Length: 381
Ligand SMILES: Cc1cc2nc3c(=O)[nH]c(=O)nc-3n(C[C@H](O)[C@H](O)[C@H](O)COP(=O)(O)O)c2cc1C
Image (cartoon, rainbow, N blue to C red; front, side, top):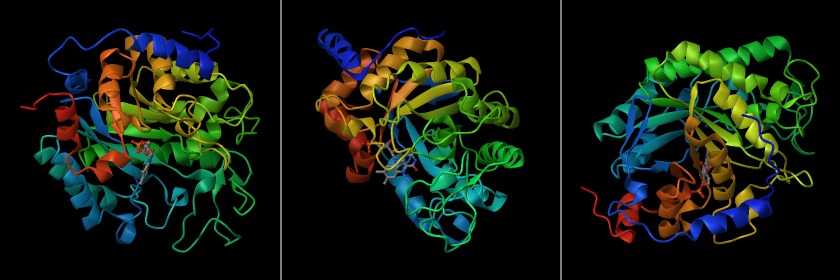
């Protein structure tokens, strides 16, 4: 399944407009509240809490009381899925000294307290696994990443994030093997010890896996290098396969993927679709969560560059992906999806996306799920 389209932002937006002209919902249960089965998991509806780092970890980068109350406030509302915020798989990949970690068993045991509470409310949860790469502060208590504090940070190539950031070490083959192992061991801990229902591998927001994926940050010439889309994807694909090996066949794997960097002139989405094809071809990934940008300081997420302020910026990208991969993989996206609940329901109803990830809205609205239902004249039983 290789793309031969030349989808551009403008062509995508006009295609989307015509698709959305097709009339009102005919079903009494709004599509946003249809259940969804993902492998062995049953999602009660299509609303998902998007991953949101709180940078409020307790000692040892472990779960703190704030996390228990925050996730309880989400599970009380019964969204279809709760994403646990980005958890770092290796101390060198920490974005902040208070980022949650999952590089040891104690951290995973503490995480289980949150997962147990979420399960007690009958909700499904997924943990996001990440590594900051050149955006990290490194393995230290007081590094800041913005000056030469002597702490090593890693990246595909020795290119600093900006002129205040330190230059990362270009990773050796041994470093790459260690990162693959860190992701797969973290996934195993999350499933075996913490009892999460799914794991998401984060390849976006300018983090390490996104840095390997992007031509702006990967200048390598080895098998993980910039020569082809496949070589830029190799680290992500190796991690997917190793994670699957460690967690067994049942637990769903999701990927949060940057669709475009928004820094190169005339960027098309063909590359994104090819990358998605490679991910789908592993046969291991159940859902792709579409986002964009943040690989460099001037790489804006698509929602801040949106040509149509009435359509959430990642919907056009996610819908192109959905059309391309059809039922081979579920597609979700985030980015101001809560701006218009009626339209959001329509995106799901029309099959443009399968799952709606909401971030900020869940922090601001204590009763978001019920409020969305009420706006759609639906009473949750
Ligand atoms: C406070 C905050 C923390 C976030 N932390 C993460 C994170 O840990 N991992 C991630 O992939 N995205 C993170 N995001 C991005 C959200 O998951 C989401 O993609 C983004 O906020 C757009 O959705 P929204 O407009 O509904 O908030 C964060 C967003 C916010 C507001």
